[in-house]
View (cartoon, rainbow, N blue to C red):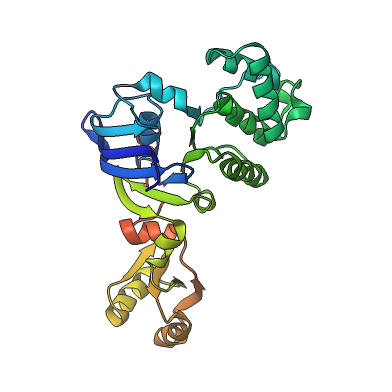
Length: 314
């Protein structure tokens, strides 16, 4: 059995009368890229704060590298690197100066600190920007410096809260290429929170959170395979009426979200002609697609990933 870098057992957290996490349990083995996927208000940020020792859970236990986050937070901090969603760089300092001050917070000085900074910048492909002020870097480059700050003390676990916030698609791809290479080359455990579906697909395993509940746990492929077939999406002139009629004709496993009628079918390619013939002139378009993580979320929760609006801590 592989060693677990993170172990969470019956974790519960309340903000007043609101439950942000509800009896959540899971294990993250060493060297895994693990993601928390969910909407605003799902519980992702609360989980991030507990694992990074920023808050204490109301009930249950969480351990990182064998140390309890409540009873041994100082030991946990020695083993984790943290990248926050909000920027933490000093824009007027150079890249190297930002990393230098971060290293000093961990008690690193002299040759050892300089060696680590050079090593991190090399891996981040930022050696040629070491003496540039941070404000002169692109958003993607600044995000890589944030990751570098979290790696200076060579942690066993890197925890990132919404790492692609504010990045354009190209910068997001670059960041994830670096994280994947970091995981391969150093076997570091990486934990991310995200609401971005293509980010979640990079993870070895996912925990899908909704309204504080763990609604699914597994690899992206395992979770998609539970759909059992293709996803048929229907656009109709009168979606509410067609949705009602489709349920009467084909059964209750048909839903409607934002005027799009949705159902799961194993025989989708045969079903589409039958569907169009059943509702002549009422259907504008039909599309068939392989299941995505969005479909898994809908399957498990009955609503869209984007349905929830921010509500305090998430």
